[in-house]
Image (cartoon, rainbow, N blue to C red; front, side):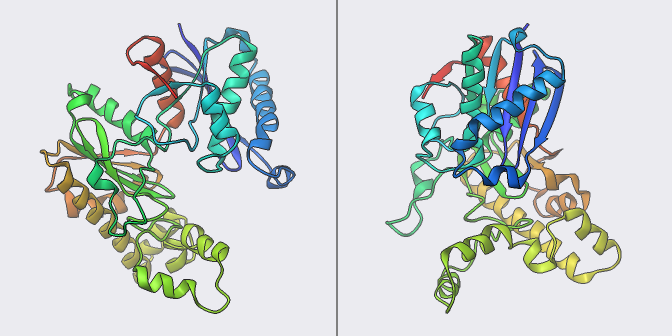
Length: 353
């Protein structure tokens, strides 16, 4: 039996879980006080603090680290990679410890996983980090030679959902053609051809608007805004990534609150939600065209897919393209555990970074 510790650091919390094979033993979301994190100059400096928080939770749950057989961490921002499971090595650690490709709390995943695994002589892995790159060459071109599109996505959840769907419907993952819309704080819509994510919108830079992100904007008008008197890079970036979308229109990023307002006949809230559904559907339609094969399923997932009013409107637009499967939420902890299991059972080749 494999006994797996999963570590998934977020900006102000660290999620951990222990699995015995596919069975969850416990999970815990450890919140970190913002004031506690302010003492650190950068994300890598938080490693020991976060590691100690994980160890404390293991002790609180009376789980001995000596019983583990592997540790799996969330991948972090890395160089473009093929999808799969990677053994954590010195090269990978160098890139996350030095934020070579970007600084983010998820970079702590492999750092902490490796530290704990090393202490107990265990293997440590990451799986399907955000930088998984299976783009076609055509997907990289933008229309401006100086700028190239990058593959930044939710591949961990997307691939785990597709594998689950294929297993339930006796389909081959390597042959599945699909579109997966991850409806979270950021919205990404992935085109899947024969199990590979061949194109996706970067949720920070384009595609549909979300709860707090702007999505695709008219370029010239955005440039004009950037050159207004008093404008600066930090404020504009915060506007696009933290204070846009539902917040910009309705003053809230809480979709449940928006739905409640609609139920009280708030016409503005209704129009904005319909526009969100419209933009998601439009992106799904666009991604469907470039798969160039018959789409077998469209999957709606992520936190916002819990809201039937939103998913129903999306399905009204795109239900004619292919069967639509709604899988609310996302379970990155389980996805990481299953990836580790596939590697240890030799169902998947362990890759080298």
